Image (cartoon, rainbow, N blue to C red; front, side, top):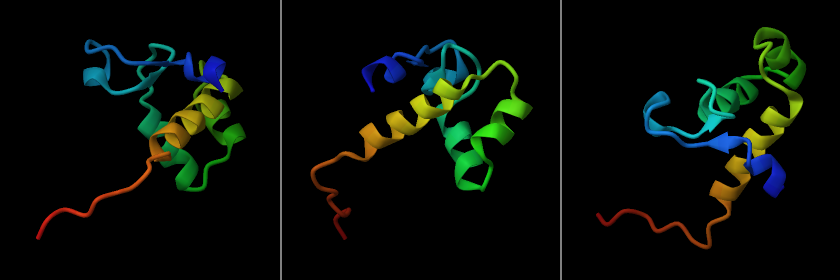
Length: 77
């Protein structure tokens, strides 16, 4: 997984510092939205020719890391 995560870059000059794929202007959240909306990896690769299969896997690995929290504290009422 670390090699995949190397594909995720954060640059304040690209997409306002959002995590992106390989310094391209494809935010991780865009890839995740496409997948959660029902797009397949093949659909994404067909529509975005400069992306690679490992880029999609990197977006998923990044999301997995973010979801690995010990506990979520609800906001105080």
